[in-house]
Length: 429
Image 1 (cartoon, rainbow, N blue to C red):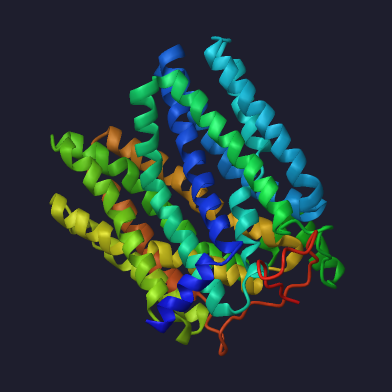
Image 2 (cartoon, one colour):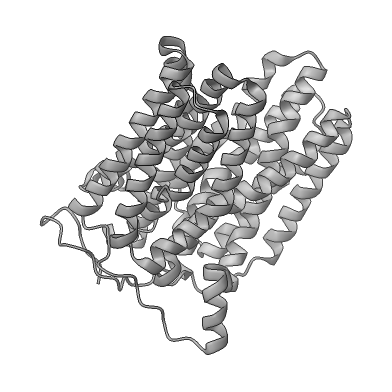
C-alpha cells in the first residue's frame, strides 16, 4: 500500500498528471485521425484511393518519425517545435478543407503527407522529457509505466471514438472534427512545453567523440550506439508478429467463416498488454538489472508465439496472443528506460522515436508477406513464418547484453527554457 500511495503521489503531481492526460489525448486523437480520414476519403473518392492515401501516410510516418526526432535534437526543441507545430496545423486544416470542398484526391494526398512529415513527434518529445520531471529511477519507472498503459488504453479508445463520431456526424464531418481536435492537441502541447519548461533553450551539446564516431552519429544518429541497436531488436520481432497476426487473423477467420471472432482475437494482445503493464508497475521488477529484465521480457513475449503452428483452434490462438500480450507493455516500458540510460542527450529524442518506428517498419514488411500468403490461402506457411519470427525473438533474448550492474539513468545536463513554479517540477541537475 505505501508503494501504491507513493506511485499515485508521483502521477498526481504537477506537471506529471496533466502531461499524462495530454499524452493520452494526443495519442488517441492521432489514432482517430487516420480512421476518420480513411472513411471520409472512401465516401468522397472510393476505397481504392482512400487506401492509397492511408497506406502512404503509414509508410511516411514509419520512415520519417526518426528524422523528425533528429531535427528536434539538432535544431533544438525551442526553434523546431513551434515551426513544425505551426506547419502541421496549417496543412492538417487545409487537408480537412480539401475533403469537404471535394478537391482532387491527389491534393488531399499531398496535404496529408506534408502534414505528417511536418508534424512534431510529440510522443517522443514527451517521453524524452520525463527524466527531467522526476527525481528517482523508481519514479521514472512509475511514470513510463503509466504512460505506456495509457497508450494501450488509447488504442482501445481511438476506434470507439472514431466510430462514435462517424455514427453521429458522418464520415466527412467526423474527419473534420478529428482534425480540429488534433489542432487543439498540438496547441495544448506547445503551451504546456512553455509553461512546464519542457523545451531546452538550445540543442544539447554532443559528448566528446573521435572523428570516426562523430561521423557515424552524424549519419546514423542513435543507431551509431550498439546498445541502442540492441534495444531495437526485440521491438523488430514484436512488429513482425503484430503485422503478421493483424493480417492472418481476419484472413483465416473469414476463410473458416468465423468472422465474429476477429475482434476478440485481435483484442487479445492489447488486453494482455494492459494486464502486463499493470503487473509490471506493481511488481518489484527494479530488483533485476534492466538488461536482464529486458532479456526475460523478450523471451516471455516470443515463447508463446513459438507454438503458433499448434494454434489452429481459435481458443488456442487467442490464448497464445494473450500470453504474448502480457509482455508487450513491459517491453515498451523497459525499452524507454534503457534509452533513458544509454542514449546521449544530443540524440535522445530521435532514440525515443525509434521505439515505435522499428516496430512499424517490421510490422509493414511482415504484413505484406503474410498478406501474400493469405491471398493464396497458405495459412500453414503463414504460421510457419510467424513461428520463425518468434524463434528469432528467443535468439535475440539470448544475444542481449547482461551487464554486471543495472543500467541507471544518467544525470540530466540540458537546461530548460524557464523555471517552472516551485513544487511543480523537481529539476534534476
